[in-house]
Length: 310
Ligand code: XMP
Image (cartoon, rainbow, N blue to C red):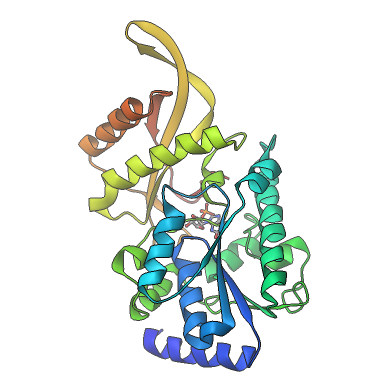
């Protein structure tokens, strides 16, 4: 794939498909939706409305960072605060697929409202090849695959879906992002799943538990930055573990640190992070988040484990 040719071709294709109509795109903070949105913006300019649905499961400061990064590219977007709706949908759910479904349902409810408001006839989605392969293979339901919720993508909610990246793998999406002028920290950014921090919480997703995993994620991202792993993050376990603090036994949370190397997310190997980096991560997490008493490093490849935990 030659990035420049791909961009020219897709921009033309989007222009042709949308004509004088209107389109809408939802940004997730990840590289896929960013690249799909910039392609669509290039093709459509003011005919495209861009929304960022803030579901309360983002990494620290993510909505604001994305807004500023897009403003620097001369692209305006609207942040939609939907914390309550998502936490309500996720309340009491512990089964991984149930959580994915709840997230997806809330997403389409909120996004559906924005689509209606925008009067768009076209939806831009950052679906990439791996999403389609894994969903068809029955490995998991990706939230951005409309067929999974019984919506015919040709018809949508009466809308047509445009997926300009559906034949690309992650490294190709990054090349396109670079050629589109995305800043390096954005096109090199680690992949981040649609259901966001919900994929990194075993058990119930509550605002308190999201806050824990968000803080731990920030520490992991800071400490591994120099190694540029494909993806690195923190996961919150459901059970509590025993610790000892100032001579007293204390039950606290358990955080798993996951860092993997991969080309396209279809297979992955654990990153051989130096021991001092790992122990520093453990020290920082337990010091800066006193509710956590144990930190473990995951050493499983994909397969058999997936990268995310749900
Ligand atoms: P897994 O966990 O399946 O992840 O090994 C493979 C890659 O896909 C990302 N991922 C998702 N991305 N919606 C997304 O947009 C999802 O539901 C989803 N689940 C996993 C994951 O972060 C990894 O890069």
